[in-house]
Amino acid sequence: MKPIGRVLWSILVLLGLGTVVNDIDRNALDVLAPVLKQALNFTTEQYSFVVAAFQITYSLMQPLAGFITDLIGLKLG
Image (cartoon, rainbow, N blue to C red; front, side):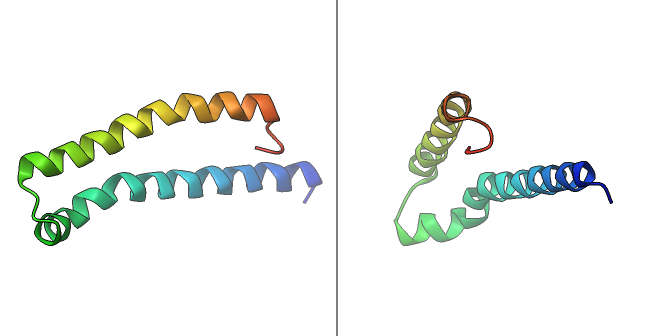
């Protein structure tokens, strides 16, 4: 296999793993909801604030992470 082919496959694998980790992070709060609500004595409304805070932080950090990656370079990022 040519060296450029290895690089492309490596990028593809990393993108796939990133997508899987991203989906697991987003769904972790749903899976843990009953346990966290019971352990922390949260009502459904209080727990919705936790989920909303996670989603807002997640959406604000994506452009910031892209900006930082642009500043430091793709290879280092």
